[in-house]
Every structure is written in structure tokens, then in C-alpha cells.
Length: 467
Ligand code: F0G
Image (tube, rainbow, N blue to C red; front, side, top):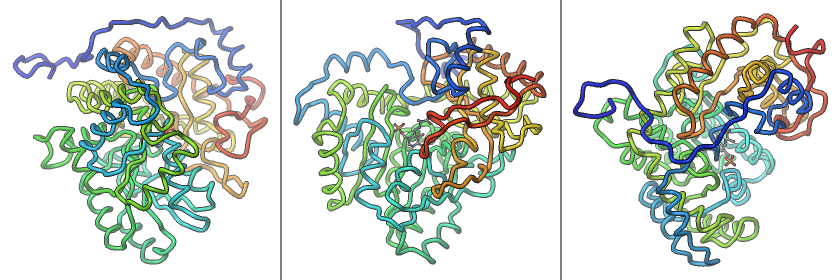
């Protein structure tokens, strides 16, 4: 529905291109060499050697002309910059939260929140913690507890809100060990669970249980706009509401939020911690000054704050959200048609391939999702990311536990790629699916103890990725 008053159905990119950035074509031999030098870890590649980069949707998107105009207006005063007040004002309107602390990205907000609100022995329930959230909770000696619903654990089950939290399980945790739970987190959309949305009904239910037990609820709001649009499309009673109104309602259910504004802030860097509690906010501000910067810039330039103030609003525009969700759904349809199992329905920012199911000949101990993402690079120059046993398998005590799912995520930078890029991807993936039996597993050669997926080095089992 590109125009309300025409019968035309094609959903087009709701922008035209003003600046272009060339992408570099490589040969298979060049990619083989690059992959080997990278220790079979796509994080170690030079991005010039990548054709279509779907490593992440974080900070990688294209900014609008309005955002660039805002950057020129950026005021770099150390304290009290008007750019901060524009940033704060926009967020106050959308979130309704009282204290807004800018940070340089999401994990800085998480670290500050963990530093002021958690202690060793605490338990933090979530629908599913993102890896940095988990790492920040565990870094202070607390336990990060994931409570997704049953449907959320099943890749092929179609359900409109697979990001929901299991409210009964949450109630049980709060009943049995509520004194150890200083806060509850809700990740929207649920990134590690497939970019799946959380319904308004679930947000409300979680909020009510938290209030009943007197525990504050925080939203990990990275993809709040995509979540709001899913609510509009899928939840009864929201079809006629704007994404902005829906986002406001979502935030009205929580006591605070952390956000990586590199996602639905539509900018290349930024984040915030927002909260209502005056005492906690004061502590957080002191920590912010210690590690990020003065509270009116918090690790960001004035021009970043301006780009974000515009970006938070642009993320809520319907033509943009419609195009974004549809591009991802379209790739999902093409992959399903090629017999590639994916998490269904497709999420807001990415398509997640069920590599465990696609490559049953590779045992979990040989990281099938990691092997698949390396194969996609080798074959098509496509960079994706593993969300499986490399990312989640290592336990805080050093032991190994296979992840529940072995996924490869194809995350879409915002406003960056067009229809032909997506068609190319579908072609690469269909080809890899045809030769899937020849893909071999990988083993870890060296790895750090924490967040190992970022820098571990691998080698293919048997010497080559394709056997
Ligand atoms: N929470 C969620 C749900 C995220 O997806 C991310 C980042 C963070 C927190 C941390 O934010 O990177 O700004 O420090 N996700 C990126 C990704 C890295 O690729 O999904 P950050």
C-alpha cells in the first residue's frame, strides 16, 4: 500500500538515494584467503572484503538528510548543550520516563544499571537476555535467567508474539526468590529469540506481576519501533493506532529502559538509560560521570544527540516500518521456498536460519551455525552472525552446554539495502542449501573466556569448510 489512494500494491523503499557507497566484489580465492586469515571468524574480516554485510543492524544503517542536517546543528558544549535537550525532550515524549542518561551505546547503559542496581547472588529474569546484557549481569556475580514462552523456543511454530515472556514462570520465580530479584528485563523485540515481538498484553501482564511483587521492570528497548509496528499489525485493538502511540503505551508499563540507539535510534552510535527512580538515577548519574561523561552528553558528541533526536521519530514512521518488515518477510518467503528452515514468522530486523535443522550431519559440538555462516561468506561474500553454541555455549563456570538452537542471523542495516540485494541473497542461500551436505563443522582453536564469539579462532574439521 504505497499510496493510500491508489490500487498499487508494490511496497517500495520509502526513500531515494542521495549518496552512494560502492561495495567491493571479490573472487572466491580472495575470500578463501580472507577467511583463513580471519581464523574462520567473520568478526575478524575486513569489511571491504564483504559484499553484503548482514553481521548486524547495529549502527550500520543509513541516516536521512534530516539527520545529517541535525548533525550540522550539533552543539558541542560540554554541559547543557541544546542538542542534549532535544535528545532528552524527544525521549521524554516517547518514553514518558523521568531521567534520561545518554550513553555511548547500549551495553554502557546496561553496565551502569548492573553497577547501581545488582549485586552478587541476585537473579535477573528476562524473556531472553541479549549477550551483552547477560554478560553485564554475570559480571557482577548475578544470574541472568531466560523465561521465554514455549512457542518462543520452537523455531517452526507460527505465533504472532514469540518474544513474549512466560508470565507464570516469572510469577513463580518472584514468589520463590523475589528477594533476590532487584529488577526484571523485557527485551523488545526479542533479539536472541529470533527478533520476535512482545505483545502489549504480555508487556502489561509482566508489568502487573512485577508491580504485585514490588520489583521494577526495565525494557531493553533497542527495537521498540519494530515491536510497536508488530503490535499494530497483529494485536487486536491496535490497527488504528500510530506506532508512536503504541510505543508510548509500551513504555508506560515500565519503570525504566536501556537502549542501544544504534538500532531504532537510526544512528551510527548512541544509547541511553532511562528510569523513574530518583535515588537510583542519582547513583547512575555518578557512575555515568565516572565512566561515560557529563550527564548532558554521556559519551556522545552533540551531533550524535541531534541525529538521534531525529532518528527516534523517523523509526516510528509507518512507510519506513512497512518497508522494513516486508523486506525481511520477503527474504524469509524466498528461503522457505528454497527449503531452508527459518524461525517463523520472520522477525523485525533479521531472518534467522535454523542451521541445526539445515545441517543435521554436523553435531552441535562442531558448531553447525558457525560453519554455515562461514560457508555463506565463502560462497557469496555475505556476512551473517552465528547465534548458537559459540555465542552461548560457554557457561560462567567454564563448562560447555550446547545452546537451545543453532541459528544464523541475517540482520538488515536500516535503509541500506534494496530489493536486488535481497534477491541476490536469496540466490546465494538457495545455492548453499543445494550443496549443504558438503559443509563441514568447525572446531575452536583459541578463545577468550568472556564473549568468545567476537574473537575466537577456528579451523574446519577435516581441514576444509567444504568436503
Ligand atoms: N540489547 C539488545 C537486544 C541488543 O540487540 C544489543 C546489541 C544490545 C542490547 C547491546 O547494545 O551493541 O549498543 O552495546 N545488539 C547488536 C546485535 C550488537 O548485533 O544484535 P550495544
